[in-house]
Length: 441
Image (cartoon, rainbow, N blue to C red; front, side, top):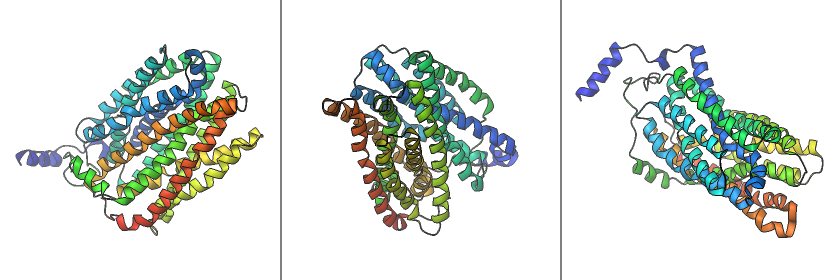
């Protein structure tokens, strides 16, 4: 009790936290630094998608091994460790967590460039996943303390641009660097850039006192529910499972295509590594930016009138994306295929804003951080693990029959997950109004 009174006294006598008093340019600089960190997050995560063909040739790996190295190795710790880190981010310095995370995943990315075989590369990727597990939850928390409620949605949208920016940069830079020099140098350079950025991030971004923009007792950590209480709550909420499994099925396709389409372009379409990096890098960059923006705008306009729209919006996106991808895989005109791939790439990311918004309305406010972490645990574990493995596994099994075309056929079969995702989201759209908790703040 005395400690609580002391905190209240300090809140009334000490200057406000930086987050509460920061000028707009300062907030913009902090958001920029968080965006750069998130861009490095996805750059280091996705760069192997473009590098795996020269890696496969150099290290003598199969498609199944490439899928395990890219998916299981990364998801193993990335998905599970993210939950306790989300808990830790409510209690210790968030800027130190992000700084250590950026330095760790970047250093392990450099170790990937020194790999001599499957297991050394697998273990280095486990380290990348471990580091990246600490990059997201603290960033969400920092944004909440730098931006008032009426600006947070836009700030989170800008932060989410790190997904397409990092994915596109990884493919463009990684592919061109590997084509001009070597795949090992691509990983070494990208990793070194992240290691150098980490201390700059800590120097620029201050860790404001929690709650400075939300009223209440400044400096007192927000209330949080016990982990198992949250787990019991979400397990008993049908919409949570429908949204989680729907987003996971979508991510199986999204992560799978992001990892394996470069191989398809090189094997079935005859593109060089440099051509593939430019062709698919621009698809990821422009399609991803448009998709994240589109999903948030549509859901924000429809959601207040119809809560089911938060799940129906991605369902419609999947229904449109599926036939376009099938057409793209079987057209012989590269320019037309670029457009046909561009639209589904954006639609695949359109679920992020609407679904994440819906998830936070399924539990009371004190359960939101943990519920979001559990949601991402399911989505990333299934999306990264299954998505990157299943396409490579199918390609290896289909190779005796289809030869160089096995990857095209494997991707065609794998697109069935979009159909499953759409059905789950449609069911969720009918259930959401019953599970929705109106007051979350």
